[in-house]
Structure formats: structure tokens, C-alpha cells
Length: 454
Image (cartoon, rainbow, N blue to C red; front, side, top):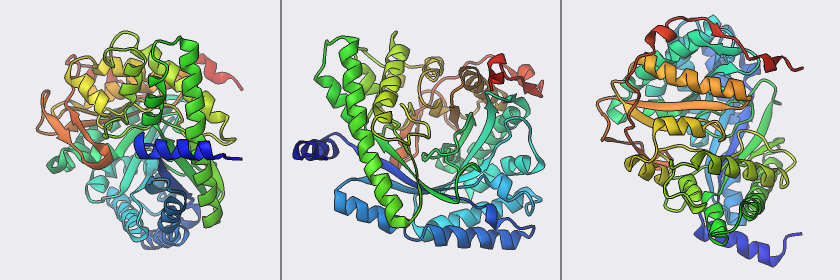
């Protein structure tokens, strides 16, 4: 039973502390759309998405209005297109046509993004995987709502270094293809180690083959709420700090559970999971960096930052799992530079470097996220950054990711503008020493020994 005090408290969180439901994501299986004919495949995909998702926007708005809960995004995730298009798509242009179909369907139903222009070559690349990956630059340049992801590694299989090398090239090509918009195509492209099947957040959302035909996954977010709660325990010990974060995460997640169940009931689609990740925005007061600084750090990036982030991530999970029986996705704390004004300030002052961010990814939910680097960074250097992050995920049995943006025509000291929730970012310096010979080896880095636990 929810009492009046909880209602008042939740209203204050929404009005003054930037609490929102970041996304309702409808997962849609396209496995029954498969055809050996490209035109039929595209027709099947368009018809399936527009039929299943026809009421998603309307239901989202109804829940917003009736419960006075902001729902920032309504999104769709689909079965990885490298699987769906394997029979019909014989060239990169064929996959681009599928991407255009996804974009057209997204516009028809009115969602913000559609994810799943994806491949899963963690152990080896099929012909279909390679064609889709090579089509990504053109696909993201000619669409508005399509997001792409590639899973390059896993704890069980190791790191596919051939795919890592290829992705370094593809990221640079994507940046070139969208250079007139500060290389924004790369903001819609992410590579993973241990990608989850039920992630509702873009750009990495796809509808895994382990999922049912359709499913509702919800992502909640409340950095501002956590920050405000910590203001009441200044100077307290770590036990008190942990309890405060845990209790606040419980309240935030319960809101997400309510929205997920309502959306599920009204759409007639099974409820999947609540992803309780703390996802920042460029708005003042909605920052992961400010939470860390509220714990006592002068600036994010100072000694103690990784420990503070580990504490935050763990307590968010502990509080969230008590509020929902079905927590999934990524769930924890995101550290996207361009989407967090506190992170941006830390980079500008020199407190936060790419190397420190990499250390922080060992204990956060995802990885190197929305980081702008000089446009002349070589593909092999980008592949090296990806390989490092894949290794962290593989060895630590966690999800890690890289969403990095070489901004063509800009260098350190410049700034890239992406707009909306994607925000803006200072260009960060990258280690200038080469790893080209290392990346050129190709093959696969084997999985660590602990991957053989069964």
C-alpha cells in the first residue's frame, strides 16, 4: 500500500530532482519475418513492427498523463538484423535497405529510436555479420532513428580480434559519413563485451533470441534523486552513505516497476525487466559526477573516484533488486561524458582523463561511453581502446562497452555538439603511441580459465 507521504515524496522527486522513466522499450522478435527475398523481408519487418508497436506511443503518453510520471523516450528493439537478414542480404547495400525500413517503421509509430541493427560475432564472424558491420557507416548516415551495436567478446568465448580490428575502421568510416554533424553517427553505435539480451537503453538495445515474441522493458533513472539524498548525510560514515543510496534506489526502481506493469497490461505484451541504471542527462542536477563529488571528492577523477563509483553501483543494485523481482539489462551507473555536465566539467579542468575513465569502467555498469576524441585518431588506436575495454569485461565477467566518437575536423580543445539527450563533449586527448602491430595480429584472444565454470 502506497501512503500519502510516499506520493508527496515521489512528486517532489519528479518536480525538483529530475526523476523520470528514461525509456519504455518494446522488444520485437523479427525471426518470423525471415525471407530469402529482400523485398519480402523488408515488407515483413515493416508490417511486423508497425502492427506490434502501433499503440506504444499512445500508451506511454496515457501513463504519463494519468500518473504524472515523465517518460522521456519510447523505443523499440528488434532481433539482431545480422541474423534476420542472413538469407536475403548478399551485399552491404542490402543491409542498408533493411536499415531504411527500420527507420521508416520507427517514424510511422513515432518512437525516438529503434535498436537492433546489430551483429553478435563474439567468437567468429559469419558472412552476414561482416556485411552488416561494413554497412553500418552508410546505414547510420542515411537514417535518423536507427541504432547499431556489435558484441565483440564474451567471458565464455574470448575476444574476436578480427572483429575488433574491423570495428576500428568502421567507427572512423561512420564518423566520416556524418562529419557534417560532428560525426553523430558514432553516437548511435556501440560495441560490447557480454551484451545482455534485454537492455532497454540505446544505442545498445536489441531483442535477444532468448526472449519471447514481444516484451516490455523499462529503464528508470534518478541521479538527481540520489544526489539530493546524499546532501542529508554529509560527513556520515560509509555505512550510512550506503543505506541512503540503497533506500533511494528502491524508491526509484519501484516507480519503474509500476510503469512497466501498466505498459505491459495496456499493450497486452509480457513484462520483461526493469533496468535500474542511473543514466544522467545534460540537465543541471542530473549528473553521476555530482553524486561522486557529493560523497566528498573535490572533482570526479580525483583519487578515490573508482572506489566511490563502485560503492554507488553496488548500492543501486542492492536497493533496486528489493523493489522488483525482474531486474535486468545493465542496471547500475552510466558514465557517458557528453550526457553528464559534471563529467564534462571534470574533463575540461583536466581532472578526468581517458585512462581514469577506463579504470572506472571496471566497476560501473557499462564502459567508455559518449567520449569524443580527435578526428585524426587512427583506426588501430580506436581498436586498441576497444580491445582494452573488451578485456575488462571478459576477465571480470561483466558487461562493458565502447561508444567513442572521433569527431572529424576537430582536435583537443574543441567541442562537439550532439544535441538533445546526447549533449555535447570536449574532445579528449588519446595516447599517441601506436598499437597497430598488436591489432594487426588478428585471430582471437582466448577466454580466461574461469569461463569454464558450468
